[in-house]
Length: 119
Length: 104
Image 1 (cartoon, helix red, strand yellow):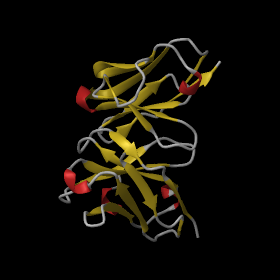
Image 2 (tube, helix red, strand yellow):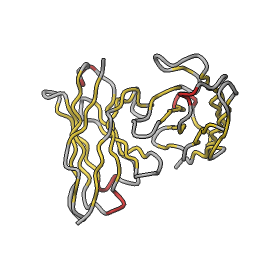
Image 3 (cartoon, each protein chain N blue to C red):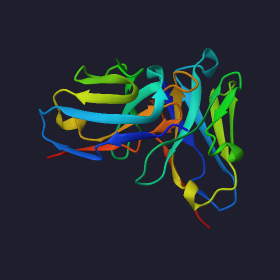
Image 4 (cartoon, one colour):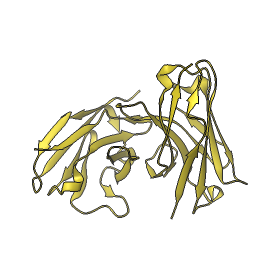
């Protein structure tokens, strides 16, 4: 069974960089599929942030592209998100997920982690 | 950028009834990239339908998806108590705003 688990600080100061890691178990990232990040502000809808393939190829949501970096570490079977220059508008539950294709749906999701941006 | 508009915003029905949820795209989208999710409070979204009409693994056959071009539909044939949740459609990197299915 594929499982994903997000980890990282739950509180980040404005203007700093948000960093999260998603550990994958039950499936080797090197075997294929795309791996992505999605966020959901409290009480609001979902937003794809970006995706990465095991080779390192990435695709980012144009609205966040200038601030986002997604990377993969196949040796640790995990991938990571960095979002720079955060503001209160970046406060959200952040999910990681496996995507069937680069722009396809997410079939396995982590349980999500709340990141609050506040001084 | 594609905009997905879901309707209605809230749907009030009783268990055993049929639910029909709509997702309209601002421009034509490939059916291959149209998906539906169910989300319950405090939980991650659960993939129900992908490729507009294919059920994901383990999804009951009371859930079905249809449509093409700009108009897509998620149908739940007979509502069970556990089906009351928020439903999102998704295409590429865009999600709809969601439809809340509540018990009448």
